[in-house]
Length: 318
Image 1 (cartoon, rainbow, N blue to C red):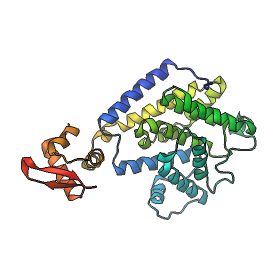
Image 2 (spheres, rainbow, N blue to C red):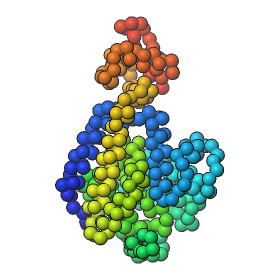
Image 3 (tube, rainbow, N blue to C red):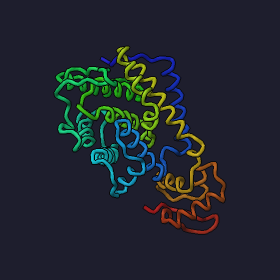
Image 4 (cartoon, rainbow, N blue to C red):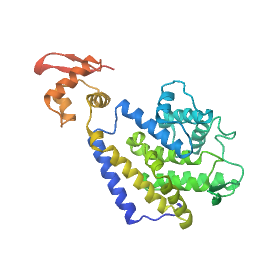
């Protein structure tokens, strides 16, 4: 049986907007960001997701840790970041429909932070909001079969991934399967579910928008708890995803640099090609810009050049 939710007009409107933006991103070659942009987005993702949980490290400190540099900071915060870096580095290898992969990701994410990392909780928990209990999670003995049901929903439901990712995120938070690390696991797994169908989500730090609207995030969770349906949370998360895609399509983001074009072309081309072939991919650039790009590609050792003038051909150096 599927978890309870309703497809509202707002949800349909957001799905249409998200689908349109994903199409625009693919058409403008933003689905394969430059290595620099990938790194920046990864830093924003880790910083935002952990900041929601109270981590105090800055983006600059996280950058230093990614670059294997030493920093001064609380040991717990440093361990959280190092664990998150390890998980995101392996994200492509996890199967989003596998409970074993889910537990393995939690094991890595919470290593050295809790004693039972990678294991479902074996005691009851209540989630506090200030000085009151906002949510009492299901009894611990129910957690394994509730999570199995949730993974069965991921495997068997014909629902689209945009909806399934939100439903999983909410239902997992409701079940609260771990003593600690539930929030960051919910956001991590939603990213994984989305990126398996839309690879661009590996590079979209929607946690950044959640971080900036934390009160709305918790309010949506609360509203879903009260209504007995994940509908309010689906609407909130789809808005977050839509806003994140809008940011990526911002004017500054969609102007590709020479580095971006060379990196993208070298990934999609595996045969010899001409300047005309290069321009057929990047239709918005002039022939002079294409020539400058290709010259730089040769200088950087990305391409090798053969022939002259109209008979010039290039090959990717593998």
